[in-house]
Image 1 (tube, rainbow, N blue to C red):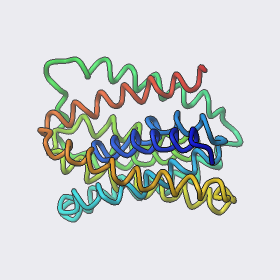
Image 2 (tube, one colour; image 1 turned 120 degrees about the vertical axis):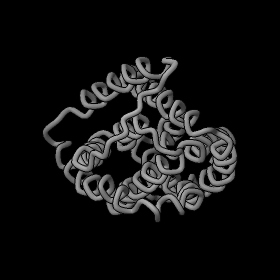
Image 3 (cartoon, rainbow, N blue to C red; image 1 turned 30 degrees about the horizontal axis):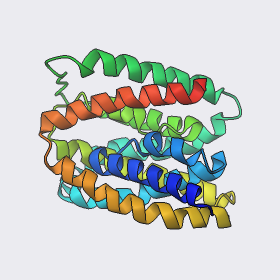
Image 4 (tube, rainbow, N blue to C red; image 1 turned 90 degrees about the vertical axis):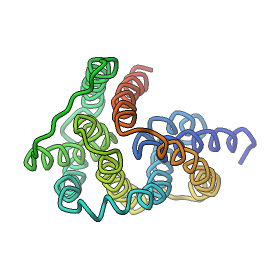
Length: 247
C-alpha cells in the first residue's frame, strides 16, 4: 500500500469519523469520496459501512440512557428498517438506483434549503407511530437499493423538537444496525479481501480517534443547534449525492 493510498484512507476516516461522532450519520458522504480515489467501489463501500458501524459504537455509548429510555420509539424505526434493507437489495434488479439517488438528492436539497436558513425551526410534536415505521422502512429500502439509509430518517427526525440525545438515540442505533447488515452482506459476498483488510487497519483506528472530536463537539451543542445541524447535513448529503451521480 502506497503512502498516497494511506493518506487518502486516513483523510476519509477522519472526515467520516468526525461527522459520525458529531451527528451519528453522514459517514459515507464525507468518507466515500476519499476512498473511491484509491479503492474499487465495492471495497470502498464495504470499508465505509464497516467503519461507520464501528465508530458508531462510541456514539451509542454517549446516548445509551436515551436509548434505553425510549426503546419502543427506536423499534418503530428500526424493525421496519431491517425489513426494508433486503427488499431494497431485491429491488436493485428492477429499478434504476441512480434515478432513485437523484430523487432522494433533490428531496434533501429542497428540504435543507427550505428549513436550514429559517429563523424558526419546524416543530412537529404529536406522536406518529405509523409514520415513524414508514420512515424507518423507506430508509431501509433506500439503504439496500441506493446506500442512503440515513437520509430520509435524518430529515424526519430533524422535524421533531426532541432533546438532541433523544434524536440521536434513534438515528445512531438505526444507522449502526443497518450499516452492520450492509457490511455483513458484503462480507458474505466476498468484499473483504486482503486489500480491504489492510484498508480497515488504517481507517478504523483513525475513524475511532477522530470520532471522539465529533462527540466532544456534539456534547456542546444545544438541542436547537443539533437540529439545525441535522437539517444542514441533509442539505450537504443532497449536494454530495448529486455531485457523485453527475460526475
